[in-house]
Amino acid sequence: MSERLSRDQIAARVALELEDGWLVNLGIGMPTLTVNYIPEGRDILFHSENGIIGMGPKPAREEDIDPDLMSAGKGPVTLIPGGAFIHHADSFAVARGGRLDAAVLGAFQVAVNGDLANWKLPTAKSGSVGGAMDIAAGAKRVFAMMTHTAKDGEPKIVETLSYPLTAKTCVTKIFTDMAVVAVTPEGYVLEEVAPGFSAEDVQAATGAPLAVPDDLKTIAA
Image 1 (tube, one colour):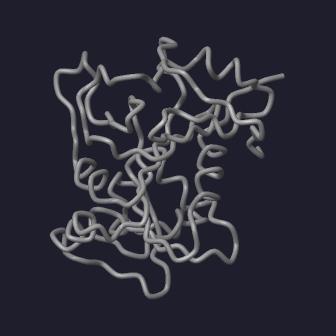
Image 2 (cartoon, rainbow, N blue to C red):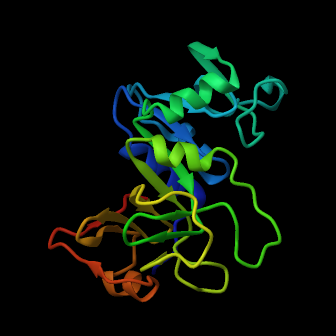
């Protein structure tokens, strides 16, 4: 029986993609869960745009939450040994200066050329881009983390954006509750499917063609 992955299951899959020694930014919302699932022994340094380098997971106990130690999304976090607080301008110098090995960002839509939309829905009167445009443009890799379809069932992986643009040609891989999809110069490549789903199921929920390799894998959930 097919069942879409939970937010935590998507975060656990994204965590496996992050390599030892990387400096990684986690965007607001679902991406912040990723820090909780880093494999033991893997050394990854997390950057938060509000001025943290060395951000750790959410405190295990409620009584350990420090109201002055929050992520950019205002969620409670910890600080790893050797972590640091830096000026907001220095935090963005890290992002704009190409020092981020990867960024994990939420998304409303991703286009086949890697264009990202994640700050405003077309029907909304206003949006909040925050630092997403700087982070998406400056990171060496951008991993989009999202549900595969919108609440009305419309595909979020599309040929071209119909939502306001955040950054052009930046997304390298997409992680959803149905699949892992690589963004390549030749188009989308379906790399993995959630348990119980077929390539045909994922294609039916996607707004652009997916190339399917012979070694299509199933996400360990």
